[in-house]
Length: 339
Ligand code: CP3
Image (cartoon, rainbow, N blue to C red; front, side, top):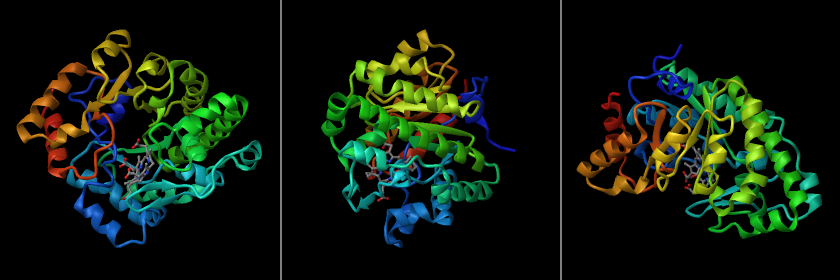
């Protein structure tokens, strides 16, 4: 039994007393308690693959910030690794793949993850649930197939992901084959997370914004929809950063909730899709403003979303040098709001 099931009731479209709030990248980056554990380890991957520690940092923002949900501490890049492309996390630089996908034989060689390769994630979910003892629900997650394809082809972060985009144009059939394998792996992975006890899940399409409407319709929407359908009753959130051109398509998928980044205005979507749950969309940079401004802008955001069907979040992950007390102020302001 969950003591706080606000986010679950909200995503199912039930009437709630106030909007639930959680923060993308809440588990990690900003909390001194996280940084301390992180410093004591050899690296990021040790934290991700040690279930007791992953669970500990997953619960920290619930204890310290008072969020209404815990998101399991992991990374979207565990899927390429489970399919045969290991990643490294380079200190201060970000992800790096020693091997990337370059040819049709590389696509052939990739396996479809069955889910069991990532037992450490499910163990972390179970540990987290034991520690939380029903205080708040646990959110599972995965990268969207296109965003995972970006890393598999590019091998590291990029502003434009032009090698990945080149593939969509130069190798459309092979791109579909790769997306298909990633999608099947992701479904197996999310289903195993569901069995371990997550109450909802989010799919991160972080690089959606480098595409166009036509490419998004061809290479993203069908795979995202396949995931939502495969997950059945488990409610999902899809967040496609920068994808203004795809919002109406995303709102027409089977996801119960759609995330908005901070450049998107909720009102226009609220009017055309009154029953969809919208998530977002506080600009994470507003957290560098004064306390008064943080409170004022939070209230402004709440009023723009209206008085139902809203999961409060930032418009993208919290930046590492943000003062965690400002994040707490943002959360407390939401929690003081009554519909
Ligand atoms: O709090 C949470 O949201 C849960 C944990 C989580 C992490 N990564 C931990 C992490 C989640 C949900 C992710 C998702 C993720 N990973 C995304 C999608 C979200 C987004 O930001 O768009 C992406 C694109 C990645 C890939 C990735 N992982 C990058 C580009 C980087 C390096 C830059 C960065 O964000 O710091 C990572 C590393 C990473 N993943 C860190 C954390 C806490 C920082 C590593 C550290 O502690 O040194």
